[in-house]
Length: 403
Image (cartoon, helix red, strand yellow):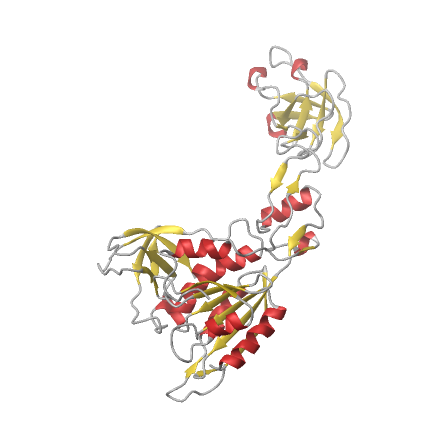
């Protein structure tokens, strides 16, 4: 076990040390329609040129530019048509061929004239444009202009979005290889914590941390919650429960029991369960007692402080990147935007300070008042939180992380 004294001077360094210890879970093959929101485990490579043939970009007529006379007094007979999905055919000299959007360009044609730019008369057309206004290649999508066979389209480690799902099928990956979902165990500690529906006495509290963590995990399609349980503040019981979770989970999130009190047993229980601590305590507010460890099978274990705002902040700032790394993401840290404060209060800390804010416009936020890390009333209406460096009293710009 590392010393409880702060080992890292910034959350960035601490998170980097944790991510370096985490490896992705295994992979599985799924149908392309079931890949939405999953993380690709292999690159997507074009299995053929895109488009695979020269095709028309518009409904119109394919012809040879050389067949057009020097003036506008001409008419071309139409030698047939090619619809999308039909093979190309040769274009007779001095003729035009009707084509539809996405249809193959007939062999020999070098230009498509839009249907709205011709006068149609039975089996012939007259182009209403002057010949000089028509250029070779107009309205033709050339073979391979999107991608060439063998070209890398998507790297592994990216989530399957709607455009990515379309690309998978378009380039022949009907059953892509993806990382399997990360099985997460959630463990809420505290003798004073009551489950849903219970009526607390004044000395007891309702469990807000479990629902907050489950709400976060529910937004992640590459995660499945394997277990959500409660443990009393007892070292033996907590160690047993952690061992059970590590036997069936790819990652474990624990709420409470990580500080320096006599009944804060999570650090000792994690070691007893076979975990190796990466850090315990960081120079942050809230979340200073945060614990990060790695289980015997490489499972990230995040011991989140028990106060609700601490849980929300540390789960987003540290647990989410750890889960993304475990899920195979190429970018473990979610991208964050920068915001300026419209009314900074001038307060400073010698710590990295996470403060709930409400967005008031593009790149602009205001602080949301709250009393302490145990106060959910104020942050409940916030949009996320900002990260303020030590001793910084300014307006920003500060990294903003949405809930």
